[in-house]
Amino acid sequence: MDIVFGIIAIIVVLGLAYLLSNNRKIINYRGIGVMILAQLLTTWFMFATTIGQSIINGISAVFNKLIEFGTAGVDFILGGVLHGDGGVFFFDVLLLIIFFATILSVLTYLKILPLIIKYIGGIISKITGLPKVESFNAVNSIFFGQSEALIAIRSQFHHLTANRLYIVSASAMGSVSASIVGAYMQMLPPKYVLVALPLNMFSALIVASIIAPVKVPKEEDKVDITNVSNEKSVFEAMGNGALEGGKIALIVGTMLVAFIASLELVNWVIQAVFAGVTLQQILGYILYPLGFLMGIPTSEILTAGGIMGTKIVTNEFVAMLEFQTLLGQVSEKTTGIVTVFLTSFANFSSIGIIAGTVQGIDREKGGEVSRFGLKLLLGATLASILSATIAGLFI
Image (cartoon, rainbow, N blue to C red; front, top):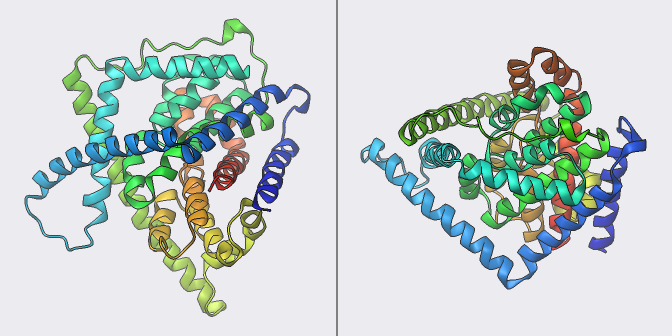
């Protein structure tokens, strides 16, 4: 029965995207079908086969080793500062972003990552019929943050129509940066975080391709990776990567202070009017129908819905910290579905980040992103629901 409800949830997501479509006549149904099939095969392979599980364990081991290296750097700075058995989130999680950002910066300088991303994007473009720029950006968004992914295709911005701009923005919002994946894996089960990466990449493309379908002339569809890094040496790349990682850690920490405090304030106001009611409970009721279709056990839907709603109105870190306290109290199915849903940048604050980045590249196109900002968030949220539902089919 869960499979039947899961299929219904997928149809509902695709149906809502269809209703939001700007041009239903040119939707690439073949490409969408290929990507859904790719999601199903990827999830089945990762969850149901020995090889897939070995790959997940191998990638997790690599991340764990990198976390060990990063922790050595953090411990050196702390110099033996005692911070309790439970640790300090900023020290134990956020500061590790600096090391991961450094690695990404070096791999970008050496042209290793851009080359890999270009060819994976090219393969996706070839088998789905999607434009190369959009495919490259979708893969790029798995490794880099929203701003960095969009900046990487700045040379192609003069070719981007409103629909193409929607697709690249949706990919940036629907994915996460590899520099903070290590942080996610310290809070939630690594296997679900890792599976969420390819699922969300495809989901963002699927939903965005329905909402904003495009047909692109070949002469306007070229990917240029020659100027993806401005660093002159590997040491400059390391330094800039570290500074960028530090900035991300501080931004995330600052946003957590603001959002968690604001959430407490909102709950205090709500409870002053409705005793015992919280924003999370309200969001849980709103998302209850979708949670049911996604396959979350009935007794856990309100709790899971509240966590997912919290992510939309605040950010994924706030929601992950809340959900982390529930691990072991909820079923494995709920754990997997919610983890996959949370592993994306689909939230209100991302609208401003993406619009600001695009405006810095092209002022006119930045205004276009601001105009379809809410539609962008809705599409990215539908993409997260699609990914979580597909994951739930195999848990």
